[in-house]
Image (cartoon, rainbow, N blue to C red; front, side):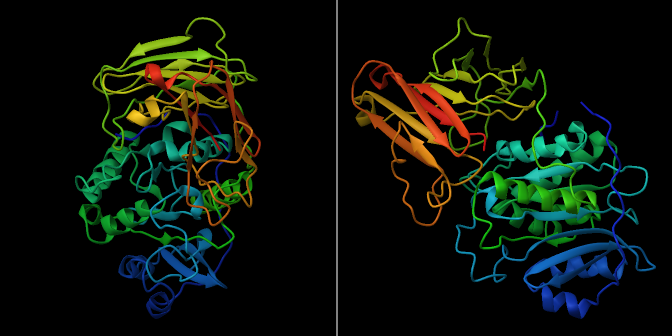
Length: 438
């Protein structure tokens, strides 16, 4: 099921400028690899047009008199054949791209207009990622007033193995969101291979039976390298502009005073929930990672794998301890959560025999982006990231194996985010994960 979490009022998006519609021939020329028949059908109905500006594309939803009601912009570089310059791996990471955006329309409704100014937004992750990939994107949507209960991040069944029918899964999720929100239209945002699933589902799969009309934008400029706070904001800005029809009021994340956290413990390398996992959460000293007293929350997961909810402090870092049979006791260190989230998902770690013979194993993880040493200031335990080269980005994890020694502080830094962890002993089957927000 999609994850979302209560509403707050905000200004209604404004309408866009005016522009003329385009022809099916122009669509075929500009978008040879972008679900052209669906886009053309929408254009013929007077609902959607797409045009290019240099190396970017712009989509607009028109009424039958030709007035443009919505616009969005991003580079057309993601789908096969759309670019020979995008050399990044095509199956990873939200921040590689200005996302695939589908404006899902029903009947003659105009996205962002009519009785519902805030249609539900459904975020679809790529291969190897999870719903949690969208955490900062959702925080920025909320910070600009989009109602929290209209934002959905779904877990797809395919990463990393092709299990189940992702197109049918997406169609079921869209149906569920539309039914639960009592709406007839939605915005679907897909990253990486999630965009392929969305496109295929609408063009060839079960979603085609729901009479959705789609406008597809996608791609990554070469300068959209993953992932710095600047580029993260750019991806959000373009996604918001397409969904809302205007620029966002702010790019920063607005903190909450008492964020509520929740999430699932999942089987490694899948999104299946793990029952029977023991979770304890500690507030820690920001500079050292040492615990400040007893657990602030403890739970054992049920069939749904959920460990929360827990009311947190927006200025406090936390240690999440996950203990599950067959796995190392996994200590996950996170920086302070500025806002609520119910996609704080975690997976326990297995140690190899060689790793259990070491002093401590510390994994630094950036699940919402790659490390790019020519752009990012990043270090682990005061040194360069093990296993991360200065070349093109493509690595989102770095593993530090320490020799046997007393437990001490290990600091992970990336740009403006600093997390202090503790070097728990691998010989006692403990593993350490430092997960970055940004």
